[in-house]
Length: 111
Image (cartoon, rainbow, N blue to C red; front, side):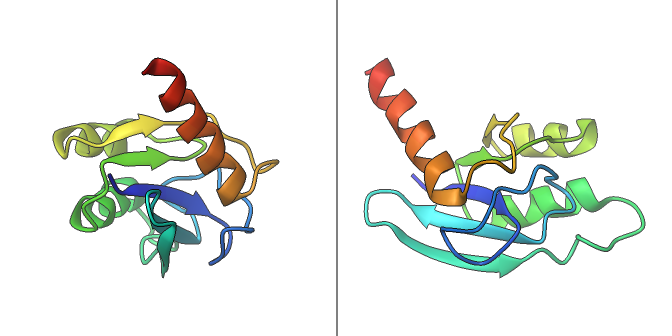
């Protein structure tokens, strides 16, 4: 499983970005190894269509899960077509690592 997380910075200590399409960075992480890569979001400054463009990036990075604050309708539609599970309503009060740990602990509870 690969998890994509919207972030304000390029480390696991960076705060969550509440804006999917206009986040500053995407953190792509393998929770089994904790190996991650940070990518600047080229859609951050687009005039229009930032959400679908950001969704395309996440799909191309082969993520299966997205952790973020908010996803717009067009981006949500694109992510669902790409079979990405969306976990939203995260706030900038959390950093990337905290959000990941919360998600992973909730998944373990479902087992």
